[in-house]
Amino acid sequence: MGTAVRNFDEDLSPDALARVDRIYVRARRLVDSTLAGEYRSVFKGRGTEFSDVREYAPGDDVRSINWNATARSGSPFVSRHVEERELTVMLVLDVSASGRFGSATRFKIEAAAELCATLALSAIANNDRVGMILFTDRVERIVPARKGRHRARAALRLALAHRPLGRGTDIVCALDCLRRVVRKRAVVFLVSDFCAEGYEAALRATGRRHDTIPVVVHDPREVELPNAGLLLLDDLETGALRMVDSSSPRVRAAWRARHEAVAAARARLFRSMDLDTVELSADEPVAPPLLHMFRARARRRPTTA
Image (cartoon, rainbow, N blue to C red; front, side, top):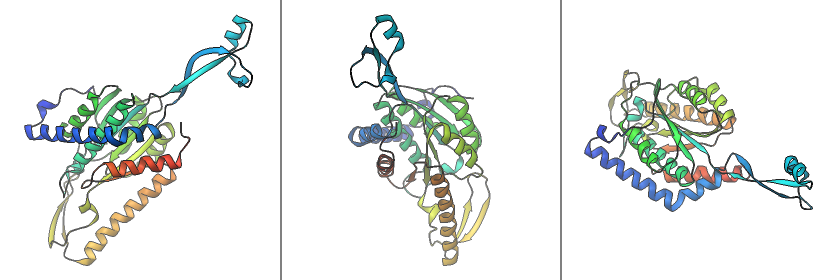
């Protein structure tokens, strides 16, 4: 279904390459100045791993006695363990056609790509492995989790250069693929505008196996219609056209109410699963929502391991 990242520079125009460089530098500065420490404080290792043994001392937990070493030496020894810090971070990124919408300075996919690069750099700064799954109405590409600072820029190039075969959004397909290819527990960032239905059971199953964090990417015009008269709206995923009279206060209010109802239902779903979430607007920097999530997570889960 997918292979490791190849060099996508050849697929990007000079302007696009310059944009990749700008986004990458911005993400790296943000991580170096702020996010690396925040990331480490809330994403800890999977547990502990065996280090060595030492002689038993009064007060040691008898459950830590290493019976093999004790039998060999004739005196009690206990096992010592160290924290297993290394994590696997999977970026599951929606590259469907709706990501190519943007009413401000950038498309939703560009905001999502910058967030993915920032998360990848944060993970790599803490010696974690980073992988990626791109999806539309099918799995488009799988990048196995590996270490290395270059992977953050490669992920950014891939997100911006990939030419999807599909147009729609199938979150179930993406999560089913994730559960097949990532066997051990991982930190999963599901980055999408969530213009999809029927993914609740798959998300619950993923949340039971992995530390799953939905990242909802949206654009201001998806929330508020401008007062601009008759507008011909094109659904980028289905190609359906719809004419609306945006000069009507009733139409604008109905548009806003529909978005708010969908967003509220989605938020209730995530809360019912006890998932940390990120809300990212395409017209805003990525740092504030990430910091908000990190700090909220630290308050809610001070002892998470």
